Length: 211
Image (cartoon, rainbow, N blue to C red):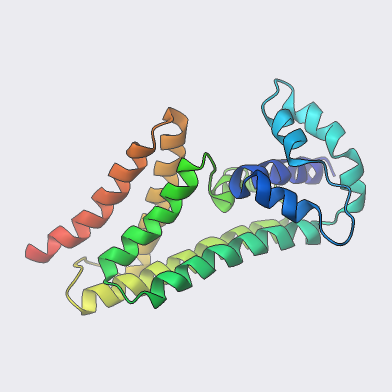
């Protein structure tokens, strides 16, 4: 029970960070008349010295009224929005390298909005999450890797990209690189760190064409 309560506190705090205040407020005030705390109250707790105790008190009532399923639905909506963005990149019918740059820009835009990838942040506390939530986090990354692998394979077939090995292996490396670069860039408060790392990964794929 303690782990579940810690996980739910963490998830609500991360939702504020990942989705932003306006989106969080919209999710929190649905037709069911939920008793979730306001986004500003959560933000205040997250920045306090005793954030755990603050969130415990803040969500005492919410924890009685909201199920794991409802939290999962929030994560699923986050994933659906991310995948919709990837579908939009596909519709643009651009080259593989440009698709990769637009993919990296999703992370860059979130970083510049002073937010983080929700599933990336959840993964850092993976052991505290209930099994259904762990599965949703893995599903998010699986979907990202499948999309990237397809783009990479298309790029190799058309001669736009050159790399050795299976596309899925490179896709996993790209996701790991971008998630890590995002966390470091935020730690330093320097989004250009992320931009440089992302561009290096993509440019090296293009540069190998001439090798």
